Length: 249
Length: 249
Image (tube, rainbow over all chains, first blue to last red; front, side, top):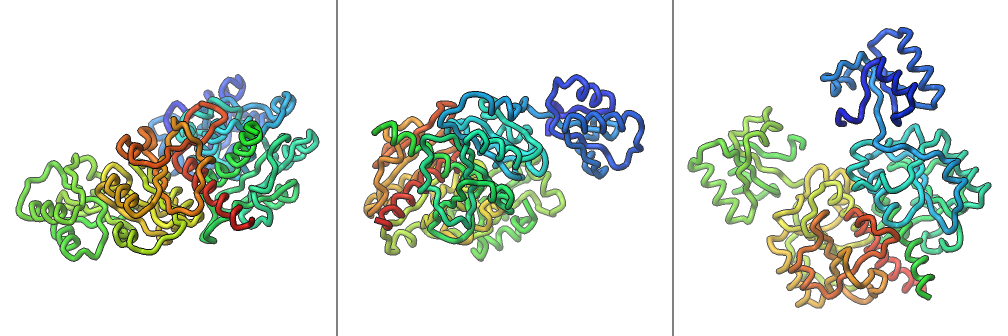
């Protein structure tokens, strides 16, 4: 991670938290430093703003050795996240969004965001925990697409799904063991969210339960599932294919 | 790169070249060592076997500092490549293969191979130059798929395309600026090869010229093209969708 994407040192991190000018992905606090009033202030400010902080082994700080970090690093997002309710309140018609449930790999997140922009997806929703955040690798693998789509970070995906359903969005989860296949859904004439799961664990049970459709991509070989960004591309471009074939009729 | 994936030192590399038991992706020779009979023997053996050797800056060898490499490293492939003519001579019916024209990124190659296995693609063809070779990152990102599909390495892609055409295979190149769209091709009842181009340069002109179809994926936004592995997934799963919908009729 480049030096532009961190803020280091107790005072600088407090300042960033107070001003709110920079989007903070996460705050790392070394396990080896003693708590003092400034550390407590950082924890309180982070908590009040819903920003994750982690007590981290000393070794994790080795990569930041050239900075006088005092055991405190704030990882900065290259983008400003969008508020979910702000997005939801806008008018939507035949819109699609993607909800990512625990993507761990920066390359996958970058590729998914790039595909979203190509396919005209209206927003990307990620959880603030257990998901890679938008960082400089994501920025690079997205080919800059992170600047062309609202990215929304939320504390609870299940709350998001429920709010979407209240607003007549349809929820489609991708799951390799689903009975229905992704080509049998009619993606036209509705607002829909596609939920893609973690690389290994898939979509979590509570989200599967809350979904209107659970779909798989039919495979020729039962070798394994697709890479998550490839699976998402197949589904979202099937939706776009249907839309285009409707327009052309 | 892990130590299992290299052979180091003049004698060991000569032995590997003579025995032919290990598949060598590439031989690196430090620019800073003096040529001697053994180095000359390595160059001659490599040339006679069509294995690339590169004179490499000293710095490139820093990652191998713990090995007594004498300025010579052979990068070993985790798989045994398949011979193109051997593959071509087998019976093929409604088969598909992919030809990769200059993929640079190991993650992309791994994801493409994984998608190939899921989609029942019969072989992956890569050129021996100007394309990432099958290495340990490719193995990992393919989720082991490299062991489930023939991977063919050739010196000339244009020769491959010509040989395929002589054998009644259809050649389909993917190009973001094509006029035709990938949904208008009927992928059934033919053997076909899809050519995917380098991340930035796309498919080279000579291959485009030799292709029977050049297709694009219609986009909603003209932001940029898709990541190459995602683009390939969209096209090959469109072919599979057509096949499955024909079966179900």
